[in-house]
Image (tube, rainbow, N blue to C red; front, side, top):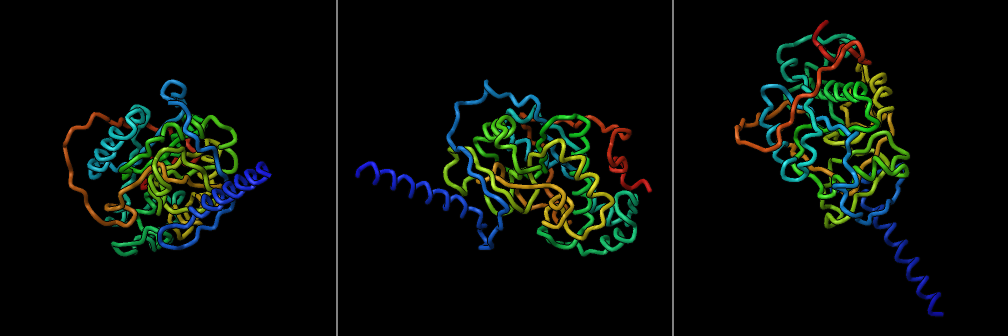
Length: 320
């Protein structure tokens, strides 16, 4: 009798944990996130991975504007140095196109990037847009091109996985390295997704409790593309489907070529948090430049070889 009661208690507790874990998919604004699939991973903290896992074959790319966004890069270097110093030497900077300038100058873009008539309509969007599924702005187009440049780098480096980052990340989870070691080495964690968001619109790195366990994976749409891990075989597929840009939604919208072509997911809790005080997608805000020193110095990535690019026009989108 005692054994039966104990077993019943264990089953009920496990069921309660499962239900509670799935309920984490409800964002802070009260809107339900419809999950295609949910999978609970082992959240036990493994031994320290500093020696067991070096992530040698995992490149990191950060998208950053030339000249007028050096302050954002500096702030991100400081966050990396504080939270994940091992990431600095693995990260290189990809030059982001300046969509805001394109819009101001009414700069034409190559038709292989976006048809002329579509681009003319987008250049007419007002100075302030919306970041979640709203009308496309020149900054939003530039963001798509910037991510595509990072995808082209992945193809030329041929790494099986890569981490994509935007330059407004401000905080990283204490178990970032442990999570990346697990997701790149555990084949069970590699099933069911092409890219996995590690930063999202509603959840921070502490939203699921103390940062003492490796985040779990969820399947289904979530906004934001500030940080994600993507597989090599997914990159070529999305490059072919995204260009020329004919849609009317931003990169993180569920109807975008990114989400429509690939299978996506997100982590609970988030691996990284971002500051949206300044965003080129919305074409607003200027950051104050700073020359304060930081130990981490992110170097520029090697130049892309246009001959080996899926969309060579990405190297110079304004060359008509």
